[in-house]
Amino acid sequence: MPTIQLLPDLLISQIAAGEVVERPASALKELLENSLDAGASEIRVQLEQGGMQLLRVADNGVGIAAQQLQIALARHATSKIASLDDLERVASLGFRGEALASIAAVARVRLASRAHDAAHGFAVQADGGAPDAPQPAALSSGTTIEVRDLYFNTPARRKFLKKEGTEYGHCDEAFRRIALARADVAFSLQHNGRAQHHLRAQTQVERIAALLGNDFAAAALAINESAAGLSLTGMSALPAYSRASRDAQYFFVNGRFVRDKLIAHALRQAYSDVLHHDRHSAYCLFLTLDPALVDVNVHPAKTEVRFRDGRAIHQFVYHALNKALAGRGGDNPAAQAQLASAAPTSHDARPVFSSNYQAPMPFGVAQPAAFYELMTRDAPLPQTAMPQLEESAAHPLGYALAQLHGVYILAQNAAGLVLVDMHAAHERVVYEKLKTALDDKAVASQPLLIPAAFQVDALDAAAAEEHAAVLREIGFEIVPLSPTSLAVRAVPRLLQNADPAQLARDVLRELREWGASRVLTERRNELLGTLACHGAVRANRQLSIPEMNALLREMETTERANQCNHGRPTWFQISLAELDKMFMRGK
Image 1 (cartoon, rainbow, N blue to C red):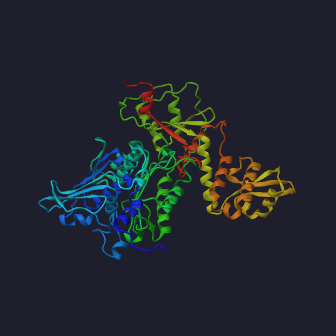
Image 2: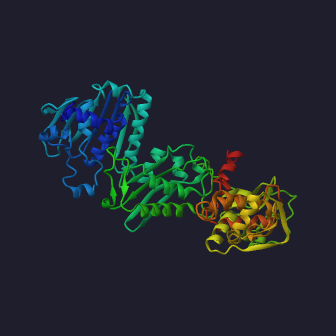
Image 3: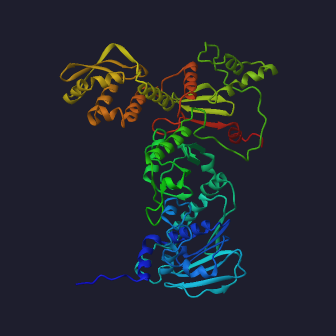
């Protein structure tokens, strides 16, 4: 019978390395975190062959005393916690005391350091085992650690490493996460002797733009919310900047990059009403809270956390982001040309429009008639008339000019030209009105002068009878005419122009498939989105100028009106600078 025996310390460290040091990127993450915990203000990283051949991290932190260098490479040796109370309030990035020992067990490691108050630096060497005695080393204040030939003594692990390019990609991502977390620290990265990143100490917004790109920064909203000891800052991209993958999603808890299901769910919910179903949001967000309210000691890699009050965290993150995304139409265009290089040009005071345009007609919905009169005058505009043209600045979506192919509304605002997808925009307006009415239990019904009859199967007829109360709650009155036919006597007033039979079929299908309780809770938005699509103005319907302006004004007072229910943009801005560039004006 096999006997139970204690494993050697080296073997224990090599086993632990499988969790802590999965690949070169894992080792880089641990070393960078140690440098930050040491108070470094500048960190330099050098890689060779994707980190498999060499991984060097140098910092200007507080350093390590000569007599502690050997202890630093020992298992469960750390300066960051000393008791259970410390563990329950961990404020440092590292604390387990496993990383350096695990790395030293599977690589050739050289650790050199010089404390700020020390006259000389010292270094220790460990080739897959215990470190040797400290030796003098030429070094300025701080610490430098070199990791060579990762997994040289465990070939089974080394063969699972990928190609150089793949491993470098993982290292670059680890570097980005750490650099995003600490914008106040300068970072540099070299790979195979070539500089890849050089980041000075900067503001959080500047660091995000440097690593995620200026396009992200230009299309992102600034987040800054605080409540009950919780703080959420950072930047979250508008839905129009959505991605095909999750490669631009960074979330930090107390400066630590995490992947948490609770947080991910809150973020998905915040974007659910404005993001296309097959796209992914982009964000770089920082959650700060009392360390006692979050447990970071869940996994050796420390990318998983557990919150003491997960529901409160979920609600805070969701509402903070939802509030930022719930802008009204005109607050943030889905796209806008930003031509910094375009030279400023002078524009004529009076816009030029087709002479076929017939202006005189009654206006409504708070339209400035003078605005349209000025556009169609043949005589030069007096200087006193100029301010009246600026009335377009009073509304971010401006005033309608015409309809294009029965699909798009062309409007003029202070910035230039606005193009609106009238169906998508009206769909969002109707959808938000339906949600508000249902939340207030005030969905108004519109009786039909002539009930709409349609054929159904037995299950639809049964669903109409079983869920009659629910149908009335959402504004429908559907009665049986025969075992295979129903009649719609009333529909929601907001949908009075839609096909009543098709509306009824969609509602009954939802009720049959999901049941009344789920339709009014988790499936509510899907149902209302379908109804709003039917109730929105259709393509090729000719709208009058007052109708187009009425839609623009409703967009400006409707939350999330920059995207339709499916996440597609509802309007675009083309600036005068872009128009000038198209026509080469000023050149």
